[in-house]
Length: 508
Image 1 (cartoon, rainbow, N blue to C red):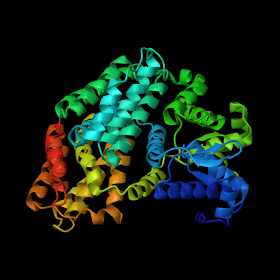
Image 2 (cartoon, helix red, strand yellow):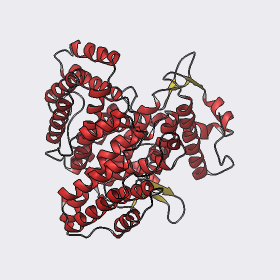
Image 3 (cartoon, one colour):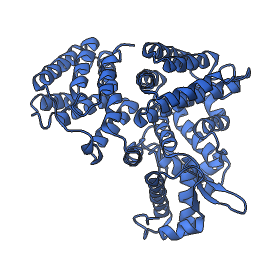
Image 4 (cartoon, rainbow, N blue to C red):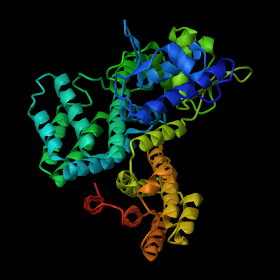
């Protein structure tokens, strides 16, 4: 194993930072080497020696990777540290965690998920292999039983299979992450998980999932699109009545266990995980903002009835996503932070490189998402009676004057600024991943920059700017749809990719 950088740091705060570095490096190595679930990573002593740190730091690093679902401690004679989940599963959980902390709202989530699922279902319907279809048939022919838990399990299996049938790791990653986020928000909204009359995966949704898979087996793309809309409507019902913040706080231990079931189905709920959720709920209930003081360590220890090690483990997990920050001295204590996507984006880039995800894998979803971005941006401008942000207008102007060689880079800037202008953590994260991925060395092997129709691009950009100024959502979607077609059509794109972009409907 490689040594983590900064191994000479000292002190408690430095130890925490070093533990975070080691956890990140360990995750990168598991991803890069594609280590399978159950792979032996050695023991705590071996890890400490490999990274040149104390066992205390190694132990805290392992606590981080265990919370993330990457590793677990195997007990017994042949005990030690083992890989607990696949890299894509861990990354999907990390994306879900960040978006949960960034307070993505249910309405925004459903709109984005409808697009992601629509792309996933069409990909699965048009690209599934015969061997995949046989697996799908076997799953449908297997009776889920009459109890609600059995039906729920089959629904989860169907959705996971559909994500694999896309043959697109990027779409599958976001589909899985948003599925978990939907269930998490449902739990925070007052729904019990997993077995309840108000379970997020109720009978209606189970029926929809089965119909989706049947349409995929029959290559019925129109059918799966209709089913995607039905699923979104079913989820919307779960968010009709928001749970009071005080009630949520009182139910924090149970909520934490339910969330853990969603995020790490095979993991045992740790006390630190419950405390982390309670802290997050405290922040929500008190409507605290970045920089506000939460409490001192002794106060938090008393509030949650835990010792310093458990509290610090909970705080470290929240610090990893930027939700809180802690310090010493006059400005010490635990303060509310600003959720930071930087760590999640870097982990995603590591995974993309290890999985050899191509630019086409990313662009097929990005091309659909940016059309939704145009619509949601205009809705925000209408609601606030606001003008388009200067940063976006500047990016449009630069792109309008771009040469063929740098046109694609200029369009990327327009897409990113448009996403930022929506103020949606979900859309910003998705487009940040896309933009950072394009900057990396990997895509150069798959794609050549440039836009074939410069005049058409300038015309579409002008139309998009005019639509923004007039707050016309319909024409904004139309202009952005044209830009997507120009940006994501290239000689290297496969026929299936091009036909998919033309097939997907632009409306609901």
